[in-house]
Image (cartoon, rainbow, N blue to C red; front, side, top):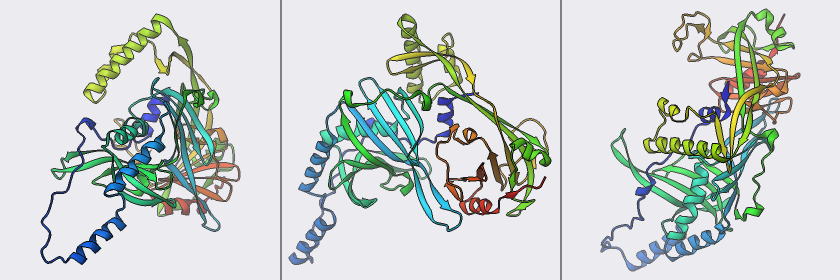
Length: 454
C-alpha cells in the first residue's frame, strides 16, 4: 500500500533544478573592441543593418518587447495557466501506420496568498485526475511563471535572447533567471537558465524551458496554451472528489503461474507472442492483481490543527535547510497522526477503504534466473536488466492504469498508443500494455499478438 503523494514523487521525474538562485548573474555587456581599420564605411553600415534584421530584439526595441510582455502578464492575484507537455503519446493506426499526437495537459489555478493550487490533469482531452493542495517546491513551473517571470520583467533583469517559431507561432525567448554553476565533470562553469517564450503578436507566454548554455532538447519545452492572471472570484478551487488524487492509495502484486492457467487468470482468452518473439523465448506467465482505495479523512480544527501545522512546518524547514530528507526526520512528528494540509484545511488520515481486487495476466519474454537485487536465492525471477518484452493484459477497464489510477483515455481498436518505453491497445475486449526497449519492438509485438492455445 502506498500513499499517492509518495507514489507521485517516485514515479514522476523532476526536471533538473537550478539551485541557489540568489546568485543570479547580471546582464553581461560585450567588451568594446577597436574597429578593424580596413573595414570600409559602406561595409560597416551594411553589417549594422544586417544585425538589426536578424536580431530585432537588440537595441531600443528590446525595451518595448519587455514592456509589452509585462503589460500582457496582467496584475491579477491568481495565476491561471494551461500547460501542454511533460507527458503525451502518439496514436498509431496499426493498419495504415498513420500517426496522430495525443497530448497530456495540466490546467492550474494558483493563489499565492494562500499557497493553494488546483490542478486538473487531462490526457487526450479526458480528465485523468484532479487535486487541490498546498504548493510545494516540485511545482517549478508555477515558481517560474509567478515568482520569477513577472518580477524579472518589472525589475529589468529579464533579457531577450532570441526568436523562434513554435507550432507556427513566432516567439521571442526571454531569459527570466540565470546562474553560472560549475560542473564537476569538466570543471567548467555553465549557464543554467529559465527561459520563457512569448508570442510576437500577443506578448503572452506560450512556452517555457530550462537550458544549459542556452541549449536543451525539444522534448523538454513545455507549451503554454493559456496564461492569465485573474481575480480570486474568477478562480476555481473547488476540486472534484471523483477524480481527486487526495487520499488515494494503491496496492498491487504478482505471482508466477503455469502457462496453462493464463486464460483462467485473465478471465478471457489470453493473447501472446508465440513461444518466441524477437529472439526472446517465452519465459514466464504471472497472475497480477491490484486494488485502489481511499484513506478515511477527518477534518480537524482548533488547537489540534494548529499543532499539526506547526510540526509539519518545522519538518519542512529542517529538510529545506539541509537540502534533503533523512530517515530520522520522521521522528519529529511521529507523535502526530498521518495528516495532510490542503489550503486552509488540515485532514487526519485513517484506514484505507479498498475497492474490488482486480486480476490480470503478465507474460514475460526474456531471461529468468536469480535476481541480484534481492537477498533471497531464486532461479525463476524475470531479469529486467536483460533484453525483454513484457505483455500485460486485463479485461476490466478500471484495472487499465495510467500510473496508478484508472485510465480514462482508451485507444480505439486497431491502433496503439505509444508512450516512452511502452504501448497501450485494446484487442477483442482485452486491455493490453506492451513494454520493450524501443518503439519498433513495441509495434512489432502489437502486430504479432495472437490467441494463446489452451
